Length: 133
Image (cartoon, helix red, strand yellow):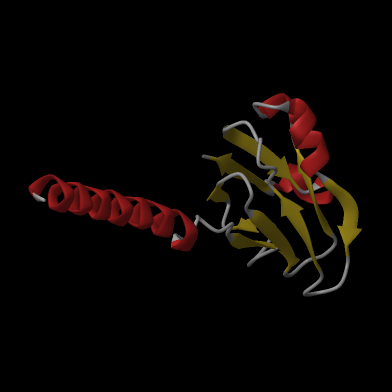
């Protein structure tokens, strides 16, 4: 009788632990992708913020501020992954105030510092950095 009682307690304990593990997997909140905003032409010919840290899966919205037109070109020569930097680039110029476009960071993005610039205003110092962590 004692054996059956001990076995039942062990089985109940094992079932409880299994339910806890399964419950934590089912009801846990995985990290959600974040959305960041960078203003182009913020207070002059600059990006604001000039440097932004993101994670794979995140989205960066580039929004026109002042002194349009603006675009965002990622510099393949100053990026850890030249092919990714080319695919992230948005060559079309945004002319209207408030006009925006999204840049999605792929889940397999190589970490590092990706330099970007605005083609018409690069010479004026309109350069930024996207750091994939």
